[in-house]
Image (tube, rainbow, N blue to C red; front, side, top):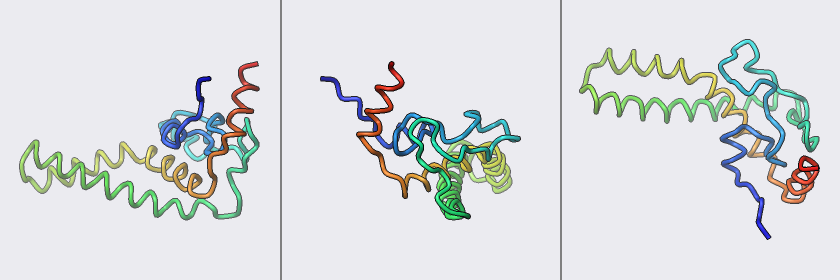
Length: 135
């Protein structure tokens, strides 16, 4: 029998519910619709997992976002340096432009990672929701 278990990276990459890997974490899947970047449902539409377990829950996602942007900046500066040589203004402006372009993704991925720390994958819920969506 074929195993349908999905991995954590699937849920993270496609911003799916960390419990069932089927429901969407955000109402609008496009992070560049900036008017709706923060819109999340209260619960997973598929399994009912609560996305806001307590008031101010996502404040911790700021630390994840900080780590993502620092890592992204280090990689950007390294690549820009390799491609164009050491030019301080090019490194600063190039990194700033890339950080601004990636801001919606950093915001959403930091929330998804933070929620994954507290909600673990449930194989039984995954199988039940997969069967319900197939019928």
